[in-house]
Length: 387
Ligand SMILES: [Fe+2]
Ligand SMILES: [Fe+2]
Image 1 (cartoon, rainbow, N blue to C red):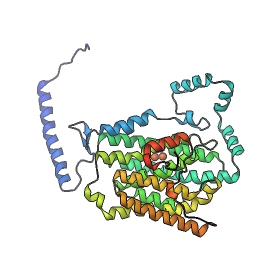
Image 2 (image 1 turned 90 degrees about the vertical axis):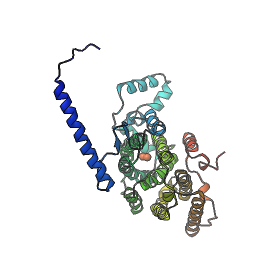
Image 3 (image 1 turned 180 degrees about the horizontal axis):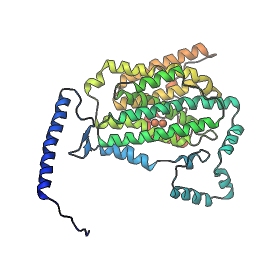
Image 4 (image 1 turned 45 degrees about the vertical axis):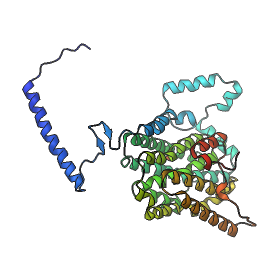
């Protein structure tokens, strides 16, 4: 590189550097002192000496969650061509056009980019009014959850340690924003009234947003996202809902986040054994029970047993909770049995000729791809009934 350097005043440089050193000592000394007294101090958990956030690089987590998210990043314009989104770049548009050109006429017709009006016509053709209301009832419930997922992940971004964890959370914030705005258009395309949050969702989601620190990981990434993942896995094979496959894939990554985080930064033994912590988290789970009872009619219209759905969610939640260290295996198994009894007791009261069943062994995820994603994410906890 050829540059003609300009002259500088050496004396001024030395004075400026000396002044900076003094101010640096004062500023950092004051903040360290305030921090030791618990009165504040430096706001950013940032280690500029090592060019790293406090907690270190956590590169494994960055690779597993940030890099992978970017690899799998999808655009609404390509995945949901009927939507109003124009988020793909010219290169992506060109690739889609090329892919479409290599198809046969029949394939092209099936894959044709459909307009919003055509998409609405497809929904009118494929669904009865009752089925539309059922899909919207279930999808809007999780749509409201996406709003909270966006808020909770953004709030956790300032709480986690390490560069890798922050990079991972940043991708979650981006993906939840996308889920929320795309889901709104999808739900609105059905053209039926969109219900407000139920009281149970309100309690579940507000409880999660207000939870103490990393308990939010439990409420959101373990509990709410397992519900979301299971809903997407259940509905993605229905007409017009193919885009939910991509939501499903994103959520499977989000459910893995607390496990990856606590692998790097394990909870202390005291935190793990804390009875108060377990009671707090159990209280966060409780609104899901009446929520399942409330959405049972919607799921029934779609041919899904609400308690099969609840059982499969609970099994996944138990797996993630034990892996992350929120609960030990025997307690999780005991809680599972309690839920099993409650489900069966309720069905015994409300259903004709109900026979005791193991709802926790059920699987309501439909698509082969989605089942494979869940098998990878949950291991033994995914689809045990399927060979
Ligand atoms: Fe989401
Ligand atoms: Fe998510």
